[in-house]
Each structure stands twice: as C-alpha cells, then as structure tokens.
Length: 451
Image: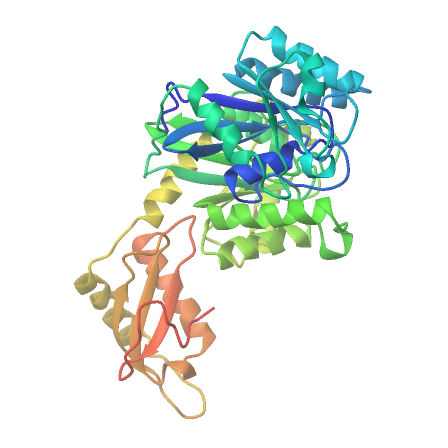
C-alpha cells in the first residue's frame, strides 16, 4: 500500500469523551470498541477513511490522563507518538461537561505540535443550549459541535478537514496478504506483532487482556505487502466477561474472516491446551491458512532433545490439521521470526494453486481405481467428475457423481490425503463439495459437503 502524501488524522482527548464513537461514525462501522467504561481504548487504532474522494488515515487513541504505572505510561507514550506522526489533530471534549484540567492539557499538547488542530465538542445533543463560544478559552479553532449518537455535525467536520489536507488517494495492492495473529491471552501475540512490524505499535505488557481491538500494520517483505492484525486473546466461553472483553473476542473472530493466513500462537510453557485446538478448528473451518507458532521458546529450559520431544506431542494435539506448518519462535531473541514471513508466502503460494480440469480428473480416476469408494445402506457412491472452484481463495473442489451422500467420511479423508500427496497444499485447508450429477446447482449452493 502506498501511503505517500496520504495524511494522518489523530483523535485525542481525555477518557470517555467519545473518541471511539467518532472514529466509528466516520468509518461507518464498529471498528473500535465503544463502551461506557472509561479507558476502553488502549492501543492506537488506525484505519483508512475517505470523504468526498479524499483518503486519509484515521487514528483513535486512548484517553489522556496522568500515568499511574509503567503500563499506563506506555499507553500515554503511544498517544504522544500518534499526535506527533499526525498531519491533523482532533481534540475531542464533551459539550455537557465543563472544561477540565485534562482537556486543557490535551489542548496544550496539540497546539504545541504546530499541526492544524480542530476542537470537536462531542455529545452536543446532551447540552444543545451551551454556547460554542464558551469553548474558545482552550485556544483552538475551528470548533465543531458533533453528536455521534445522532450523527450530527460529522459531515461538516469532514468537509472542513478536506479543506485542510492535500488531495490524496490510498492505493491498495490487490495482492496484499492479510495475516492474523491469534491465541489465548498472554501468549505473546502483541510482542510478535511488534517484532514483525519492526516498531512499537501494539502495547506489550506481562498481563492478560492487553489488546482489545484489532491492531493493524502493513509491512513489505520480498515485494509483497503484508497486513498484520494483532487480536485480543480468546478465552474459554465460561471465562469471557460480558461487555468489552466479549467484543474483543468478536474482533478476534472477525480477524479470522478477514485474514488469508492465521498464526496460532502456542505458549511453549503451556503447550497442551484444549482451547488452542479449538481456535485451530475455527481457522480450519473458515478455510484460512494456518501456521502453528510456538512462542516464548527462549523461556523454556531445554536440552538437545526438547525440540524433538515436543514436536511429536504437538503434532498429536493438532492431528486434525496435519498440514499446518509448525515453527518455534522467540520474539525476545528474534529466533525464527523472519521465517514466519517465508512460511506465509509459501502458504499463500499453495492456496493460489490452480489445477487444470483435465489433470484433476485424471487424478480422480487414479484415486477411485486404486481404492473404489464404499458406501452406506447398500448404496455404492460413484464419483464421475471433479472441478476446482476458480474464485475460492482456498483449494476447493466440486465432485459430481451418484449416491454421494452415502460416501463415508473416511473416504473423504482418504481423498484429501491423496490430493495433498500429489499437490502439497501445505498450510491450507482443502475442501471437497459433493453433488449428484443429475441435479443442476447454482454456484455456491451446496446440498452436501464433507465438512
């Protein structure tokens, strides 16, 4: 993606003034988590936005306040970094609250940057009679009154913005690869994200639940644009708290859908966890590429046999995805981190494999001749014809025949094993859909498939 001359707009302000609501209103989707609880946003979240043919980056930041500990200090540092890298700063305050000392500190910080600064007086619907002129004491012009809940003042704010920023168009590479980092809380996702991104974009802290939103960055590797998504940790259903954390898990599930390939991080010190298997199953079911990443390898006491002993155990735990590459990494030492990119490109190459219809039908004939399918209820399935779906991002095949609904699940596994022996497909699921040859089906309508 080219970001040359594409301006950055940073939204700053104290906690709970509606920054994330404004962010979502402009994007017209729920990208950042919005809740009544103050301090919901922790990472600086960045997304592409457009208005009247102008493209810009929009950055949502955490609420500015006095840092109480090192963790909070890291958050505040990110806000300053976001403001420093921005071309325009929006300072957001509340219309129904008198100007606070924190508001003054935010305004002073923004004005000190010498960047164009807008004052956004949000929640105007709660205080419609308060004169806008009363906020001039902060020293910021222009002033825009908005209500994100009523969608008031947003268009006017954006109209003023595009008069300030240069005309720019953000061109996305259609061949961009999207990589999602997933796993349980506190397995090292954000630290790997930082190491891959080569910069401190996500917060790294030794506590569970640090990342709540999907944090994104784009890097180039061997000429390929790779968008990396860091996600919140996924917990067992019974341990997911109502509210913000539940939304975080939804974001993680959304990242699976958006991704081409997912990294499933497995803590080297706690590697036999059923939830890891469940997440892998979700990725496989979604038809996404999968790489199993053992994290924190530097923290394991090991000898010459540790790696060789752990590998077969992990393979047994994840025997339902034997095609997923397994790599041992350390974000602290950098061990094998670059190899993740190499694996990613290899998996994407396999996912893009297209087999000619004549060739794949020759393969089907060989397979059924070597081992004819058995059926159920005295019905013997017959597989006559196979074709690969051309518009599916993962290897997917339609198989036409007779009595296909009686095909035993073990034969479907056999077919998958044989096609992988022939064509590889490492790192990606392979799907077969079965159709009765005498029935005409519209594209995408699948009366029966192998699951």
